[in-house]
Length: 143
Image 1 (cartoon, rainbow, N blue to C red):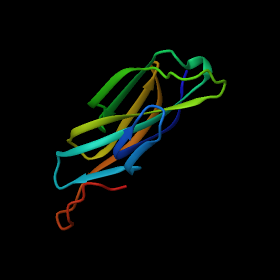
Image 2 (image 1 turned 180 degrees about the vertical axis):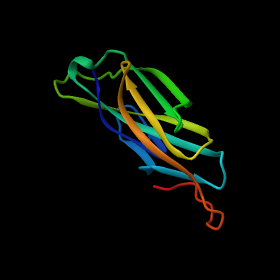
Image 3 (image 1 turned 135 degrees about the horizontal axis):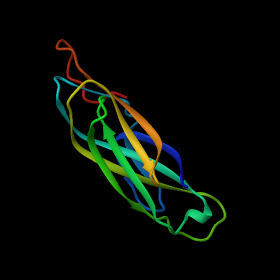
């Protein structure tokens, strides 16, 4: 089963197969808004899957679930990925990104992004959501 080499949240990310990936504002762990609920325009989930030689040219099921502090699903995505390439006995890293657009964050607390590979949860990312104080200027991006 593929292993997760790295996973993080970012303001934006772009991935092109077989090339470097580009990240803007990587390492997002906190978001805040002026009132609850608030809408966040964009968040990217970046994941690097480590695949062994026997895991290439095969489909792998992936699922991403963003859950609120009470466990309710805020957003989700699923699909299948296949890593193609030359035969090589070494592991390869397949990087992918999932875009989460116009997220409505209803409550304060710890949201989680669950990353599921082949039906098994392999990683959980934490995202703390809070309301800014009225006297403080609005902050939407906190790392």
